[in-house]
Length: 163
Image: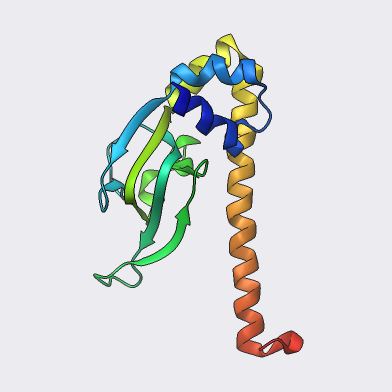
């Protein structure tokens, strides 16, 4: 359980939780191990609507464009980063287009949506803080995407004289 606690301490999902609250929820998480190249999740998975937090190793987020067979790496997750947020917050799994691959020996911890729903009855403030952490993580992804879009736009149009 030390690995779970240490991972939660560096994750944005628990930014607002104190140590006693992290100790309270650490037992809700399951640990999963993957070998290099293993698929962690992919579109169409029938897994529970879980939130995944990278504990050790790296995860490559890959997708293919325009029906190609080859996949491009979109992002590499590091310790504490979240994945599976779309279905965790109630989104439709058909909207997921990326696959997650273990890049090296990888460990993740997962939290099923139903466990947070149950937590909302017994410890509503902890559940709220977790969901705010998920929202902050999603916001960071959107901000990063917007920044990359602006940089590409500047490059294409030669704006700001940097290119």
